Length: 524
Image (cartoon, rainbow, N blue to C red; front, side):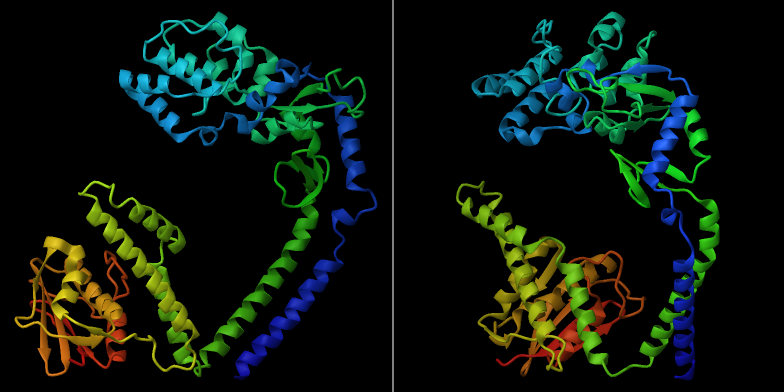
């Protein structure tokens, strides 16, 4: 215990020392000049020393009502959630097959205006119409419900045609995020569109919100320092930006102890969608040794805790119980039970109208859902059973027919296994759920690691029930380990062994040919 005490004292002293030194160091944020004043000065000096390539007003290209569609990044996203699912499925089917029956079904639908435009486009793609309406591209909606603008879809469908003149006349009906692809088709590329084509989502949101400073890959857009004066604003409220080279901006900004980025971490001042932060390298270099010292103190503390906990053995049973619950929940509760229950109930409600071939599958889904629900309840009871000495709480029930019970348990496997029932059926008394868990695990092991055929047999010896799973393989691996291809509960033979022992039974096996079985008490 002496070494643990020494490590804990050393870690505490080092933590206090490194923390004090970190606090004592004066950070750039605590300087007398405010970050706001520094930012304003930087922008004024940059605009005074550098000539703008051009002044542009991006929003003047688009009517105010169309900005959300053609400039905002979200405008390009599919909007299928806004429309009836049946109509969307019919449109997709018609677009993929061009079959008339889908077109007739669509004509019978009362389509919204946006979907009517999508139908016109699908008819054009399928060759039902040879020419689109004259105002097709110039009137909203500009974006297909399935994503991308109609102008871009048209461009992609006409790759072999020279569309230069058409593109020049329709640049404003493409989404800004599509301009990079569009401009490759043009020899003459207007500067304003070249600038817009490089905007990422952060910059596009800045345009929409009329931020005073925007960054793109090759350019920086900046309003005048008096950004809300009449010199920087059009009568409609849109903003005028001066365009500068990004390389010139980066070189100029490197002279100052601040950086500008879209990241929120280390943000000293927000400017629209962007963030001003510190870039004081000397401070970082001075700070790093203290951070390393603090990290070492934390490491020493963790080592001390590990060494102390290795000496604590009084809670062995509780740790075993929690480990078992964690294994069960991790391997079995993969799908939210509430969602499964709702889905199963919905399928049961439609059971009579379902095709006969699907009805057994519906019953199986409902049965498996109930099994998941039962497992969750058992896990909850098990976690609450702090006073019990058993890992599992059993619910002993009378079994009227052992053959029928096993037939139901094995039904999932169908022809994969052979079942040899009792010649003379018997009654029994045991926990049907946990016995099925054990049998299922043994079968999964045989199917995954054994050699067919797999056979399940059952015998009664006085007051004991014996179930044996046999295959023609040779078991050579370690006995209590989980295979990577195991299914179902997948808890391994060690967990099956623990469950059977808690039922006052035993797990037995033979290696060649492989034979695993359980033997439990059953009051006949």
